[in-house]
Image (cartoon, rainbow, N blue to C red; front, top):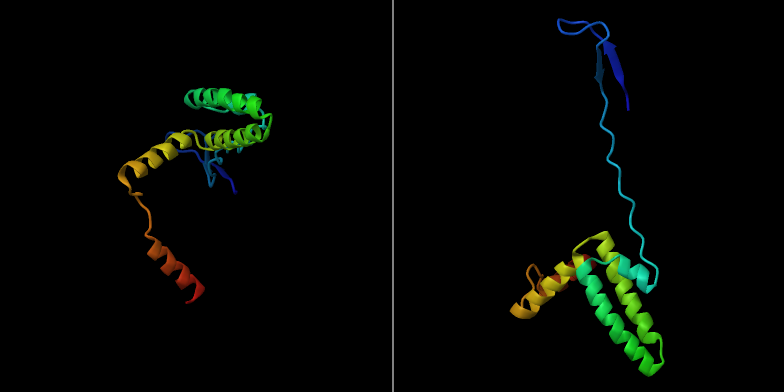
Length: 132
């Protein structure tokens, strides 16, 4: 960056008025990229918006009952992993879970995926890229 400062008197300027040219504005500060929460129920829940936190709480009770019956922690670990990914997605893009579920409901209701590319077009594109 080059800064040019010139002092130029003029009809409305005094000798102490500076003209600054060639300055660019400062780059906006970037927000630090969020990190995934720990694989811990409290850490995961803390990252969720209220509607998802309520869903998390309901599923928490169900999975705990299942683990008590089976005495197998695999279900708990899988469930925590699912919610960890959901929480991280919400940290990076708030509201993404609601948008995804709304789109899935629309696809199930209408049987059509808006903006989807027909599979034949995908096959043609793959063949083109492979030079076939």
